[in-house]
Amino acid sequence: MFRMLILFALATVLHAREFDPRRDGMAFANETVFGYGVDEAGRLHMDGKADAPEFSRRCFPVVRAVMQFWKFARFEPAAPRISADEYRKRVRRLFRIHAWLGARPRNLRIAFPGYASLWEFSRGQQRLVQEEIGAWWPTYLRFGNWRMPCPTVRLFQGVTARSVASAIAADGPQALYLAKFPSINHAVIAYASERLPGGAIRFRVYDPNYTGATARLDYNPARNLFDFERRFYWPGGEVRAMRIYISPFH
Image (cartoon, rainbow, N blue to C red; front, top):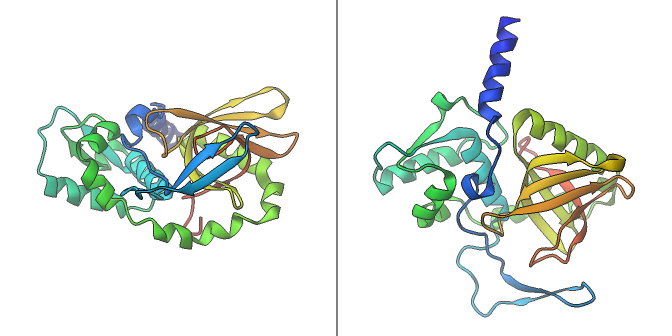
């Protein structure tokens, strides 16, 4: 019994603070290679940009990195700052920790002195973080990508919605893969959920394509699908949601 109380208290300490995109997210956005526009009929149009952004196509690496900072890093704003080389070493150590592992107690986390949050750190050390976050192309080779065009994924959307809501309550933010082949292939972090009438569930999500903002993702039980709000790259509407970074195969 005593051990159970200790574990419960530890979990409470680790997850008592709610995720805040303007504190726990990146201070920079993932850019898109294409320009997007939605016409009056709600149709999405894409075209190439004249100048390809330097940091783009990294929604999955950004989501993974945010989860790693959330679970395995601690910030010490009162401590003196260290050299850029030392920050780089610590970021590399952090990014080598598997994102699907459980959160560490504060005393076992990698320390980042001189900054109060990931937002501050990624703003002050933006180039360093972007250089270490990883290339974009491995995203297209992920094992879990087979699910994007798979129609049977829809059968399990209710299970996904309920499991994500339970996981948020127990363990904090959860990474999600949003897809509607071939229109959207994106990663977000669901960090809060709310039960709505009729069995619907509303999630608040961190979108790496925006900075410091919250987006809405709803599970609609009548259609057994998720609805993702309109974004600059998405006209709004039905998507499939799948959990990621919960095992080596996701």
